[in-house]
Amino acid sequence: MMEPIKRIKGTDDILPPESATWQYVADTIRRVMSLYNYREIITPIFEYTELFARSIGASTDIVSKEMYTFLDMGERSLTLRPEGTASVVRAYVEHSLSVKFPIAKLYYIGPMFRQEKPQKGRKRQFNQFGIEILGTDSPYADVEGIILNLRVLKELGITDTHLMINSIGDPNCRQGYRRALKEYLQPRLEKLCSDCQLRYHNNPLRVFDCKKQSCQAQLEDAPVMSDYLCDDCRKHFDKVLHILDKLDIEFSINERLVRGLDYYTKTVYEITSTALGSQNSLSGGGRYDILVEELGGKPTPAFGFAAGIERIIMAMEQSEGYETPKPQLDYFIALTNDEILTTAMEFAERLRDKGNSVNIDFRGKSLKSQMKQADKLGAKRVVIIGDDEFSKGVYLLRDMETGEQTEIPLSIIPNTDK
Ligand SMILES: [Zn+2]
Ligand SMILES: [Zn+2]
Image (cartoon, rainbow, N blue to C red; front, side, top):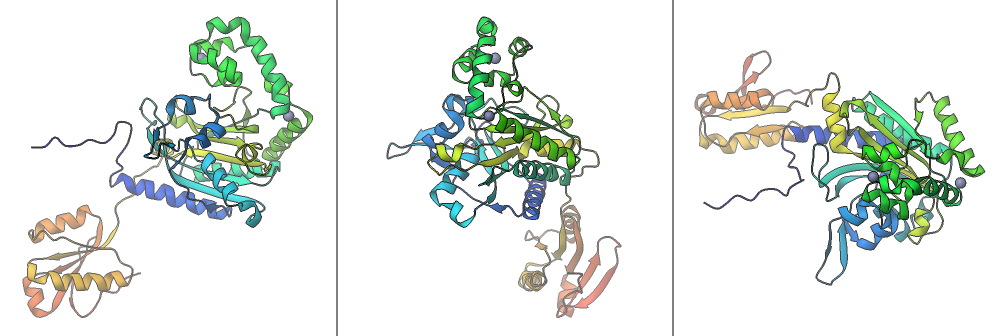
């Protein structure tokens, strides 16, 4: 016997019936996106490596240690996308989308890849959805993104969410803050982990992202960005908070929230859920007013978020009243003889013409075992064509809920509610 081949570590097969949950999540996302008039963009799952180095930041954890990067046969360095924004912005610039859409409201949904230590809720191939709104610096755009994000979660039944928000300023005012933070961290450098010592040099703000308790302890009296915001950034942040207030959206300001990507400016936010325990972040995003320019486009302010679908499904399963979607089948056709299969398939096609889902078991098992199978598949009705029925030109229609059975000529398709 050959050794069976296993899936790659950190990847998942999503099998039925769980795949129905995934379908439901994707359908809900698409439905909510259309409520806000966001339109889907589908980009390749691999890109030139440089795209991610330039956008996410060469010194970030993602780019420096988590990407699946390889050379193709032409010796070009390619990378499986670790996130969605870079590709969307690349496409926005490449196709001059600003001409057609003065404000482009886009969303994506699909797999991303990061070489992390696999654990619950953290996979090497994982799925994200997200939005990008390009072409406006309005604080209302920030808020629309956040309420859209909250609505998706709410419509998926996740209600114990918490919104944390912060402003990390722009390149102007962040300089001053960086300096102050470095001054504060300098005498504590010895006590930081080796990752944070690197962060101190490359992007000291990211020390806040460190998961290590010992590093967090060093940050207790660290200066906060809000003391350094310039007028423009302060005004923008105050406006965002004001609109959230007006719209009755609950939030808390978290001055240590910085997000692990280099491209954010001004607003950053994160939505957590207690359903997830320690890994409680469900989604997050923020404004990125300089990224389009950094990727070769015209200066274009933008805002976006991304959310992990694996985490969302974990939170859904923890939520009260959650049920795995039940399998749905309108008709199961049971027959007693292979000779009847052609007739059965013809019959099934006529049912499908009317929009019914139909299953035929080809294994030639006993009627009893076919009825069991019908039950397992969640069939609402069973069409039974036994030898007797076949010779009389009829079938038995069995309602699986009531057990009622009616004899009907094969020329007549059952009345359905479709
Ligand atoms: Zn650290
Ligand atoms: Zn500023």
